[in-house]
Image 1 (cartoon, rainbow over the protein chains, first blue to last red):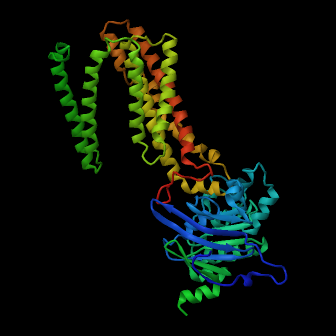
Image 2 (image 1 turned 60 degrees about the vertical axis):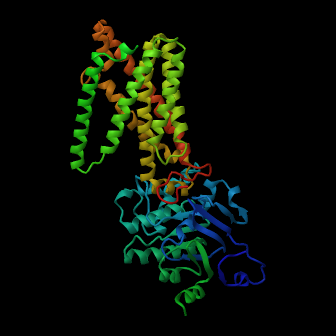
Image 3 (image 1 turned 90 degrees about the vertical axis):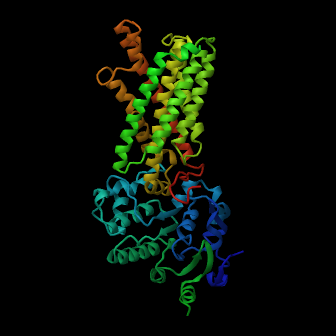
Length: 248
Length: 265
């Protein structure tokens, strides 16, 4: 069923004595073709609760296209995605996207104050995020006094932190990270990496991280999948995948 | 009829057309120096415009003597043509022809119908066709501007729009600022025409009425009536076209389909 070379056994995912762990996300023969070009080609992979799965591969290999299919920002032309065991087409797209949050490479902040950005997601469900909740989220991302600041005047690193907090405001169970540090300088990059790891552990999130940086994948992820020309080349535990990638 | 079509006036008209076309081409040559390349489009537009209007002149000689009901078909044909031209300005937008047809049809059609029923537009073909065509042509321009602006608004704000969708926003609310901006900007020419009426320009219809010996005050009032009709038709067209095109820009699963680049399906 799974395309590409699998460098792990399902048994390695089993907590002892509790039976088979259900993947939180499962793609089955997931494909997206546009104008005859297969951006994502027959990918079957599972993501388990608590995983940080790094999606690596060269430019144009379909990493971001794959990620966009996971929260249904794009429609698969074939195959399917199961979220918590349920066909994701049976889940209203707006609800699905709240549960599977996305942080993009470039943080697109809405005009207005930082707090307004954080309140955007919950307000789409008719919920009003309290001042305390805003303050708590901002503290979580290291921007405690930023609630009233104009989002337009933030640095790249600050904007990415706000973007992360804004996604967390929806209380997602899966976090999709599309090269979240590639638009940042080295110092900000390290800070965001540490922040993401802390938040993921604190909130017991599952993560799918797109990165072209194998070092970042090694520092952050426990599993990795390698894409090449839209196809899944291999998937497995991070150490094994990176060893094969390095030709060791 | 031959005598009517070819006389001294027609010869003068052809010479005048040649002079004005040469002027337009000269301006395009100046623009070319500034690396603005519109020569081909201008030549084609001038040739088409001249050919079309002369053919229409011929057809009008026949039609203006026909029964009144034929005006419905003539206006219908103009509507179809206007939707086609407008849709060509909206390349890449799925369903642009149908959106244009419904928007111009409703915008211009409702205004022409209501005003004809109210007695503002005379039912004689000689009145209904020229006035109807003015309303349709202006609605077409507004529709083209609205579609064009909507496409550029959406494509230049793709990141923000998809961020909002990824946070669980609905496409209708997400697109609202861009629908509003497209609608407002498409109505600028119609509103400016009304604002500058009589000061910056004296429209052709009023000039014609004056030359034909109408009361100048009545000619002025009737010109206001025409421009007001154009404004109403344009506004209705713009509202409809931006609302209809919004639904074409998003899929039922709240995905942005009007994206630049290879992901656009």
